[in-house]
Image 1 (cartoon, chains in turn cyan, orange):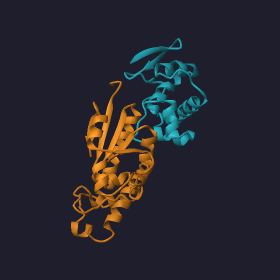
Image 2 (cartoon, rainbow over the protein chains, first blue to last red):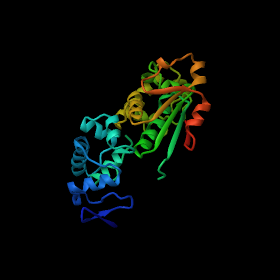
Image 3 (cartoon, rainbow over the protein chains, first blue to last red):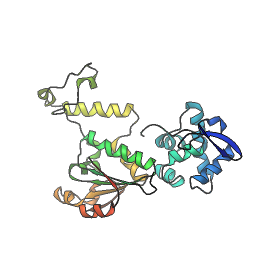
Image 4 (cartoon, each protein chain N blue to C red):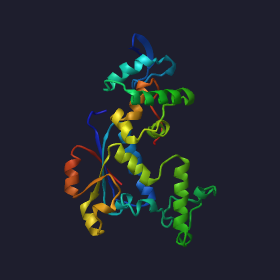
Amino acid sequence: MATKVICGKTVQVNDEGFMTNPAEWEKGMAVELAKEEGIGELNESHWKVIDFCRKEGMTSGKAPTLRQITTGTGLTTKELFGLYPKGPAKKVARISGLGKPEGCV
Amino acid sequence: MAEDRKVAFICSKGNLDMAYPALIMGWAALGNGIDVTIFFTFWGLDIINKARVDHLELAPVGNTSMKMNMMGVPGNLGIPNFIGALPGMTALSTKLMNDKMKTLGVPPVREYLQMLIDGGAKVYACKMSVDMMGLKMDDFVDGVCDIVTAGDFMDMTDGAQMIFI
């Protein structure tokens, strides 16, 4: 298993760069991981999505899919794609220290 | 993944079971940051037709893959064509499929299509089919970009991977 240093802390990641132990994630890492995904600054709406994904991830053990995020946060599909362009669910999962989202919807 | 990967779907069929492949794959593509264009042609226009999209159907006649196990009968027992031809059988298989999709948490076609449009998929209607069926832009759901010729579609999907359904 590969490791990676984020915010000065060494964490476990898989081949695709997803953290494999969500418990290693800290809030500060989101900012650094978001930069890697091309998102310069995290605003309140970005955090709303991250917080929801963390909560889901920690309870179900899985990163939520796009539709679960829109249903759970009340954001529209358009807003979600606006906040995290080009693959929101995958990007948020990586930023939130969760695995790749599974499921087709 | 290539930074500028593009996928284009050509939807030529309007049966309920033929509406989902492009929606599911297109949605997956958008979720992976891939550019998505969908060209609706011939019967596929039903999927973007306001008056038709909520009434797409699945006929059991001639459908060799549709077995009675969809109705809870175990094994590989088929639905005989003469029974499938009875009034109400198309409605029944349509309901069965819609119910299954709902159980799986898959949205109805209209909502799914809207999700794709909101997610950035570019949706076009085929000019020749539109002319053939006497349709106009007004007949289509909101978010359909334009009515274009096959040639226009080829131009705008330069370098895309094509999937014909």
